[in-house]
Image (cartoon, rainbow over all chains, first blue to last red; front, top):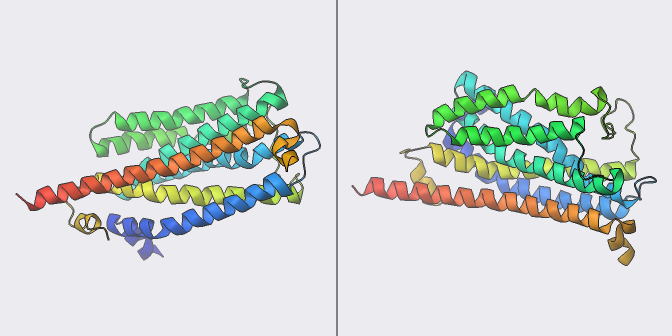
Length: 245
Length: 53
């Protein structure tokens, strides 16, 4: 196990692994997305309060979940890179940021579109919404900070510190609906014991979350490979990449 | 069928959300792929210039 981790930290090996896994991750993500979209849009009955508008949940909740978990992955990768000085970990962190930022945009946009008919407003300066907007700024700030350095190593280190400090916002977003009197509804899946959501409505959501995670992993494979190539200069193994193997 | 697309009067909201999701997910995939292709090309060029002094 440790040996495998050790091997994985070597850029050529990680590059090859990412290339090999990517199609499997992408295709399973796409198949699961189609199944869960069918379950969410067709099979699930309309909500007794929200009618058919609740179906927005099937894209809103997975993207919001990913906007937080991608950030945690990014911060952990950045921390590993900072402590053990593993170049690949920094490459993973840098690769996470744009994907996470897009998930955050998607969560904010779909939430806003849902809020219009349900709350009667596109936007409200509510704890959950505001903290999620800060989450977007953290991603953008991380990317802006990175791009302000010409030297990759310095960009890695400065970015890692921002990523780690910014992780405090993740529990704030997650528990904002519990801690404060938020307009946003409380959690319905992760309640301890029985989730307060009927199973014909629940399974498409859980499946869609899995599909989004697989999709994230597939996109991450491409982004990490691009990051590895950007960092590796004059390495002999690049010749085999250029040859198309 | 038309009832399905009407989404109980929420058609505009529901379908714009799903459409937006599709656009962002596809765009993300496409941009990442394009970035990878660009980096592969750069690596290829670097190798070629390194081989021919």
